[in-house]
Amino acid sequence: MVFEDWDPWEEERKLREFIIRMIRDAWSPFRRPWREFREELRYEGFPIDLSDTDGELVLYADLPGFEKDDVRIHVTEDTIDIRAEKRREKRVETKTMYRQERAMGTLRRFMSLPVKVDPEGVDAEFKDGVLTIRMKKKEVKKGKEVKIR
Image 1 (cartoon, helix red, strand yellow):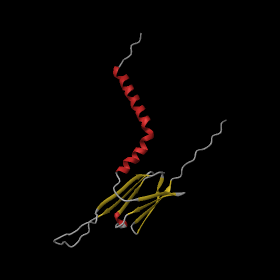
Image 2: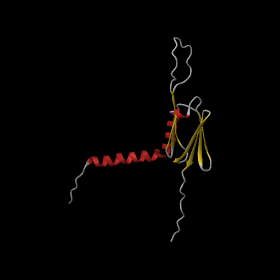
Image 3: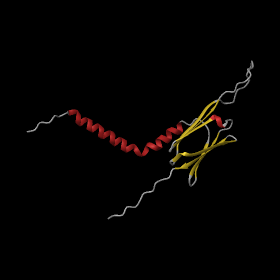
Image 4: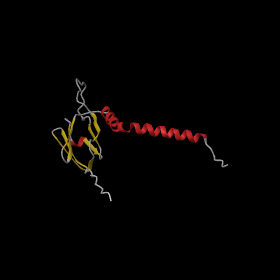
C-alpha cells in the first residue's frame, strides 16, 4: 500500500481556479465593448468624426479657440489620446470683472480605434480650429491555404 501526502486544500484550490477560469472565459466576448463603454463615460470634451478609407483612418476634431501648440496627440496601434490645454491669458488686472465666460483648462478624448493602425504612419494638421489626423492602417496579414499531403 502506497501512502501519498494528501492536502485537503489542494482540491479546494483546483476548484477555485476552475471556477475563475470559467467566469473569465464566459465574459471574454464582452471585454472590448465594456472597455469602449467606459471610455465613452470619460468623454471630456470636443466633437470628433472618425472615418475609414481604403488605407487609413481619418479623424476630424473641432477645437475652436485652440492653437496647434495647445494640442498633444498620442497614438498606439489600437488607441488614440488627444489633449488640448488652454491656459489663462495674462491680462491687465482691473478692479471689477463683470463677466468671465471663456473656458480655460484641459479637454481630452481617449478612445479605442476600430482597426489597428501604424503609429509611425500618423500625420496631423491643425487649421482654422479643426484638427485632422490621418492614421495609416496596419496591414492585416492574411492566412495561407495549407495543402493536405
